[in-house]
Length: 405
View 1 (cartoon, one colour):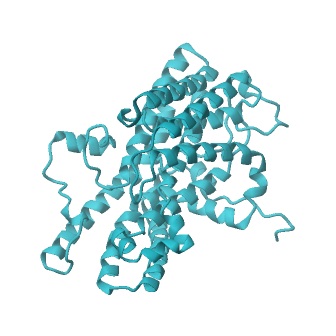
View 2 (spheres, rainbow, N blue to C red; view 1 turned 180 degrees about the vertical axis):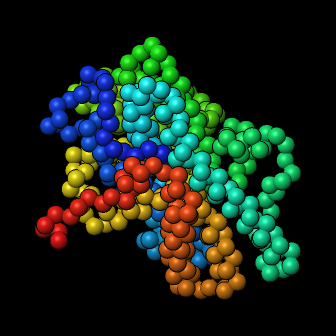
View 3 (cartoon, helix red, strand yellow; view 1 turned 45 degrees about the vertical axis):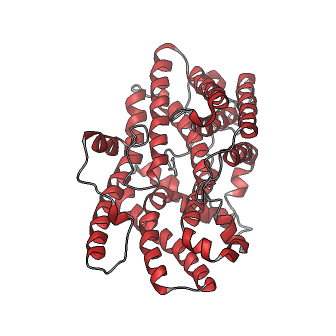
């Protein structure tokens, strides 16, 4: 996230062998209907993250009046886009786990889909980062550029731990600096996949698909209890599992709307999340909101996903939403590579010595350019590894009605 992160599984309808997941076809629920609005939220979240990373710290300090511009002020909250990615990922991975359940080899099916979705784009983004850093180091050496944070990275003189963590996207638990700054969230996504995979194996062997979702709900409640007890010292990945877990519970509630236990899980989780928000607030910076703001936002975003599901068909026919669905199709690539471009554009902006009005236009240009580069990266390095079904769901807009035409 993922992530976003990152886009991890399409939200199309799923088969299920569980009685509680099989509600009448006339009743629309998450088990028999795609939730297309998730793709729009995914696109919005990716753009929001790009916007906050476009807010240069030095420029923000120099031009304090920029904070009064509504669009720029909204951008400063863009760290919440990662929270959106985690919640959406929880919903989609719960969907993926249930899809894998009916497969003869559920673990293989689940992990293959995850690897195919995450690793190719991650690998090419990492290679691109190394090549760019090498080029920038040469430009700094010959005084074409004054300095570059990317050029300072050393990718070739490390021990086994560094390369193992980089290859497996486990930099956070191994305390290794990621090649790309945004990859910290992908480490959480990979950890979340691992937890779901373990529970999938155990549930397939000893339990039912209902109990798999219940186990994920219990995991969310336990992690929130731990988080309320230990606060900032809660370890990886349980410190952020509740955001992912609320997405799982949102899926479970929409897939099992008549099951009482699901409401109990959701109510307990929301209550514990609210308690955590009241007790703790830490981790705030320019591009990261505090834990309190993340928790409150996570609660409201989860409730929004639940409430808007019934209007999914109508909302996804709106032109702005269809445009966001399109952005959501390449949101993972956009999330991966936008910081590389923004670093280059930041160097150019500093050399131009822009005034405050001109810098705002430059800020908008950074966002548009990031979208273009993200789409190009998707076309070259992510799309070739996607299944036809994934591509179809990413770029198939709902047809407009006759009234819209």
